[in-house]
Image 1 (cartoon, rainbow, N blue to C red):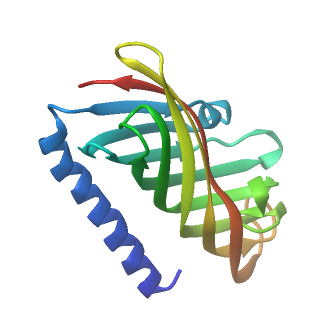
Image 2: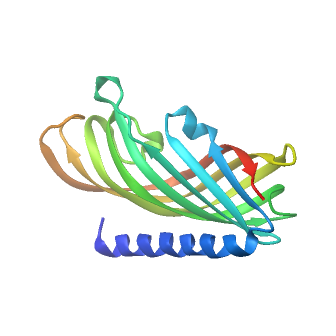
Amino acid sequence: MSSNIKKVLIVCVSALTFLILSGAERACAQTLAVKTNLLYDATATINLGAEVALAPEWTLDISGNYNAWDFSNYRKWRHFLIQPEARYWLCEKFNGHFFGLHVHGGQFNTGNVNTPFGLFGDCRGRRHEGWYYGAGVSYGYQWVLGKRWNFELNIGAGYVGSDYRMYACPRCGEYYGKDHHDYFGITKASVSIIFIIF
């Protein structure tokens, strides 16, 4: 990844993290929630999200995902992802329809797998190691299950760019060089259980 793209990604993540932390202080008396995405859980990816109310119809959601496991036949889909999202709620926060704008970035080391939607190029029979970044828009809906529990469905689409080094085989192998892959399509999908803290 070029140094300019890295700088843009660092600035975006830093700015959104600052907004979360500054908003959390004002919103503590309003609403703060933590969540887990069951779709990531199903792929053995550790994930945790937090959402904080910034205004009556605005929240800021940030999720982090991490997968460090190797599987049989030298298959791996190691990665981490940070994905902040600003959300506008049509009725009230944490209830009903919302639209979001998200950015994302992270690092990956994949080998001998078909990555979802070909995100990191063709990794069958070889290994790709690098960084990814991008942005997108989303739509979602949240159901109130009880005083402290909610359920959410969310789908998003946008852009993912990835810069990586290629190796001949999933475990080690000859270095093939660098490549870049652009992807336009699904950038976010979640089926989440949410616990409301405040």
